[in-house]
Image (cartoon, rainbow, N blue to C red; front, side, top):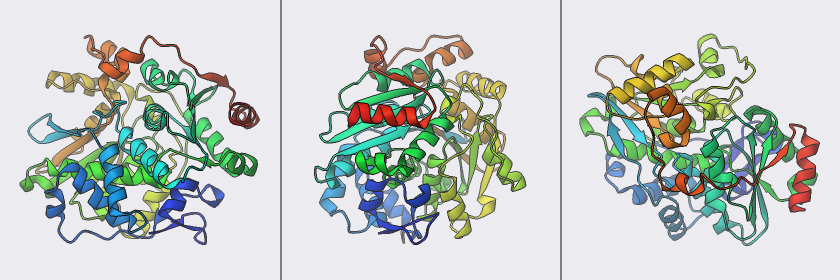
Length: 427
């Protein structure tokens, strides 16, 4: 498998190299040159989740990992379910929050951790990543206790839910957490600057576990196939998928699934008030605004890092422009959608509610809707309880850490502050 740096086509990498490096030169994203559709998608959909996921990843990655290695990695990483639930007669939700940290990022985080553990050959690695909410917990739990791998997580102070924060700031050990005086985009900028700094990149053997890392992205492709496997065959060619979108890795994975032959009719990129992409799709002008805080905080991203991959898929003809629409959903509409879902007997959190609202208002006659449920409602207990006026019970993983003390250290948004902390902590 050869991947090319989207900013520097001369910079290529194998899958293993791309996983280890994270980012390419000029902070470019590694991406396969093309995707080949499966000859018989229905036969793929007829497989059970783990067997199917190993088949999909083997087809993309090629022979860099043995069949036995891929099977072992997938069996270890994807040891939980992703059920589809019916919300109305023609709208379903894919529940991606049944993993250990109750969020969709368990798929990518756990797959990446198992890949790195398999291919690192005991070399020391520092995972440096930024989170707007769920990435932190998924990555922290996936790598916690793995020998020779340290994890550093940056998150915007006061801008993620308390329970999201507790899931990754209370672990300790090889997990180091820094609360940044800034927003997610500033956290992500710090990560990118560190990768451009040879002292830090080489001295600490940097890698990133954001969805910019190709291993995380490819893992997410698998649950789109899982969703379609649970839908009636008669509905599969009518499905519109609404994706709650922040850094746009989730949508990128869905588009890859479509390029592999999954019969997704079209996509809706559902954002909150941070609407860079919906505006861009409408007027063709890339004009990020300052990031604003919303109740769907994991999507508070104005400069989505995965967008160049989607642009590449469109430019290569692997996604027709008409198969992607962008919809921005305001705070009032998000809360209304949460209440509407509750009235239908389904309790949801703000991110899924954004996707549901966009889907319900843009679904055409005869279409089937599927929106992604990316986190358990209890991870946003305060917001959900305030909006719905009813208590939310804490599932086991959240109850276990709710009363524990966070171990994070505060830092400014100045890069030199981060650099000093990295070497003081790890050097």
